[in-house]
Picture 1 (tube, chains in turn purple, orange):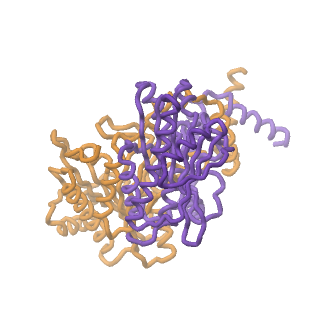
Picture 2: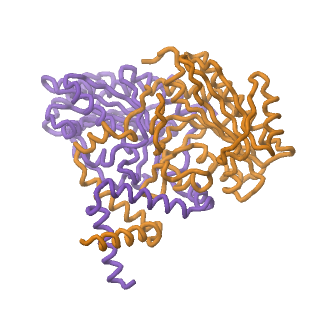
Picture 3: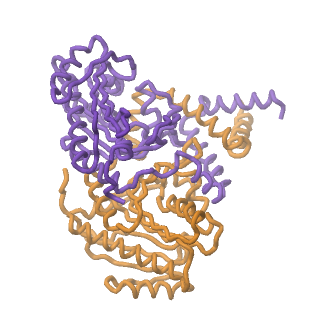
Amino acid sequence: MSRVDHVTLDETLRQALTQGLAATELWSLLLSVLEQRAAQRTPAMVRQQWESDRFVQPCAVNQRILNELDSHLLAAAADFEALELSPLAPLASCSSVALTSQNRIVSTARGTEVVSDPTNVLALECAKRLREAPGATIKLTTSHRCVRAQAIPKRPGFAAHFRMFCLASAAHERKDHGFTTEALIDHIRTHIAALDRLEQHGYRFPDRTLRLLCTPERLHLATRIAEAIPEMPATLAPLEHKYYDGLRFMLDAGTPDGNAIPLIDGGAFDWLRKLTDNQRMVYIASGMGSQLAALLFRRVAQIA
Amino acid sequence: MSRVDHVTLDETLRQALTQGLAATELWSLLLSVLEQRAAQRTPAMVRQQWESDRFVQPCAVNQRILNELDSHLLAAAADFEALELSPLAPLASCSSVALTSQNRIVSTARGTEVVSDPTNVLALECAKRLREAPGATIKLTTSHRCVRAQAIPKRPGFAAHFRMFCLASAAHERKDHGFTTEALIDHIRTHIAALDRLEQHGYRFPDRTLRLLCTPERLHLATRIAEAIPEMPATLAPLEHKYYDGLRFMLDAGTPDGNAIPLIDGGAFDWLRKLTDNQRMVYIASGMGSQLAALLFRRVAQIA
């Protein structure tokens, strides 16, 4: 085939796959393509991929440690409903509402994607429930093993898949941004309580620092949140990251060798407004890198 | 476009995707195709899929119940190393060694598949370790949320994704099929101990029955296994399912309304022989439908 033909076929092919085929036709085509691609693979090829592909290698932390860790985290979040998510979410669960690229996510051949951030998925459940009962206050938690396709930071503990512990709160906004501030205070306190609880079970989280990042318009809310958590004085700083809806918090802890590790990250998001088409719906979400906690902050190897 | 052109393009397209493109070119093409498909999706489309697609809906069982259930199962399997798997496995992890169709599995657009059966994945880890240390005896356990794409049985508790509790044992065969029989006895006893332990924590597994299925050549091994577990008399029956390597066991329990539920299933498999190219390597694996146990056999709702 000449170079021109090759290019033309490429373009025709790409055009059919991205636009020409109806979505259901695409999934049906990919199903049979991947069935045939799978049929071409030998046991030796599968074994070689097992040993070299970061997406498939097992977690470096023993599952008993993760199971016990989750039990403490879920106990610390006792007034959040514990939802167990599917490994899969609708295609574009993140990229349709958040400033993120689909290239950071593993998409499947069936119109879904592997969960990369449970807070995006919990937002879908909140949207469903708030459409059914707009006056409700939703509080959800989950521990979930996420997969991320982006390049991995060159730091110990980072992997292509990892457990994350998440909180999500959603409701119609109240007077004086009452729900936004209340939910953020609730999340920060719950994460602090989780760290305290883990410290009673073999973990150490020294040198904790709390940062509140905000846009100028939301500075009064950040101040109100800081005042409500006197037990842990917060540093206030300008928020520049457009990913958040004007408010973000970060809770770091120090490792024995003196590094500050960003362990907990949360904030306000506009996702629920996009998902419900209701401008008054507030979504507060946060996550702890629980697998990172197990790798870097566990003092005693209690479980073999 | 005329019908003929359409058909020709279809065939050219299919040919390129299944054969013409190198695997890396295919993954690269699919990456950009799915990025563009994702970009075409609105928040409303994502929300609608969340409410209708069985692959993405959350589990019907509260995560606190599953976390506690896993803690008991992992404790019952105390002498198995607890490995936490990735949500993803190499493409063809199951179909390259087992009698199963890729259509029952959700493949990704990056040369992987969503784990559908952790026993296939644990076999890969056993192959890796036995190639490094052929004299070793490997014992692994994991609790994992699997995704299955096949049609779901019309029975309560069955879903497109579910937690499964697995055991895997692997080693070079010993005299008189010593490893095969020993490992199967170990698995059966561990599962019985797991059920007993759960009965101390709010579960009931009445009317348990153990069946040993075997080919005529392996009847003497099945008999030896049955004799080693006098506390639970087994029924012996012919094995017709080619999925197993001559030996299979099934442990059922009865629900309050009198149905026998196949809860535990295991046996010998030839997968490790294929993965290691060593005809003397034995692989014994078994799984409990732990999510099914939580749904059908829990007497007391101890955790809200």
